[in-house]
Image (tube, rainbow, N blue to C red; front, top):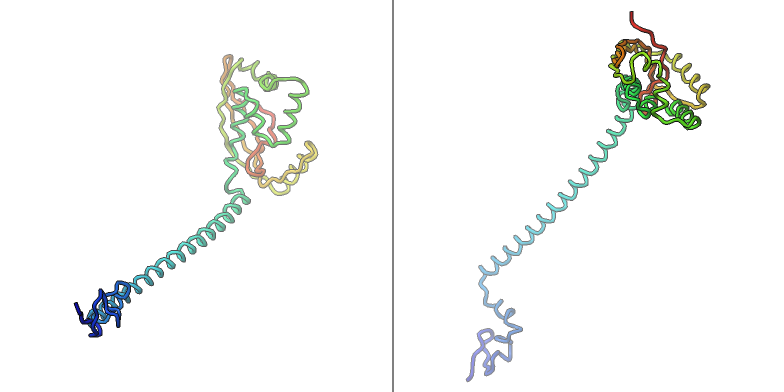
Length: 242
């Protein structure tokens, strides 16, 4: 049966127009384009433009987001650097990091009462602590034996076991000249260089309560800020309260 092509008007007998290809599957989309109305074409163009615009906006938002993350990283790094500088400055000035200057004093006396060698030597700088370690090792003493024998007069007065209630009072800051002298004395006595950031003489009252008696003694403890911590570098002889 003869057919007339809807695209070009030519006669054809097969499934598609031999002249223009109308009806041929591979050419169908191109042929149909000829029959699209102007309105359809306009709508398709607008839809394609809208799709491109949406894609561009999405890409722009993504790039903006990436930029914001980069800015956040930069801000965080800057803040971290500033914080590190501030912390270092405060530590170097002795404002933070060392704890309270009375801590080694309390540890010192409670260690004596508790017969705790490790707490006892931790209240002192390393070179002083080492002299005790060496003495214990050279004389074959146990740590507990060393502390107890070192304070045998306490046990004779107070009893085998006792407690220590430590009260720190007046604090007197030492001058730069006194600190320099303390550093030189430390070098002479222990062969080690130290840098004392600040040093105080602290008046200490300790109430000892034991099985045999109760005694209260006063001390002058000299504590120094060395590195990250406060340490006892000298403890003057005690005397009994009247």
